[in-house]
Length: 127
Image (cartoon, rainbow, N blue to C red; front, side, top):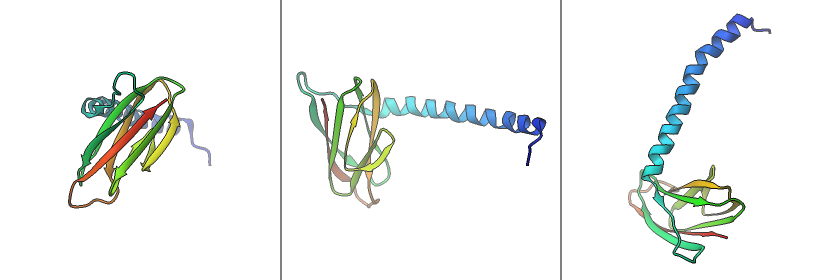
């Protein structure tokens, strides 16, 4: 079935404001999240470290780390009932990847929502 050009153009014009608003909302949300995320920094001369925290039943613990290109990042979380997401990869307890020159957002959450906070340790190395 062929869509008449006028109808196709009208549909596209109707969708464009929604797409623009969604992109703006995502940019706004990213800048807001960046302010709320704790930055991971290593001690001078070190390329690894561990951050500790508590994952609430409803919510996210957010970290950010800035890397150079072509490094290898290794992340591992320990704790009961916790996982992390990074680089659009969800639900991990360990993950390695080759970095780009950018700032990554790491989110720690509970795997299965419990009634109590869940303590965790997140080990990060970049080489």
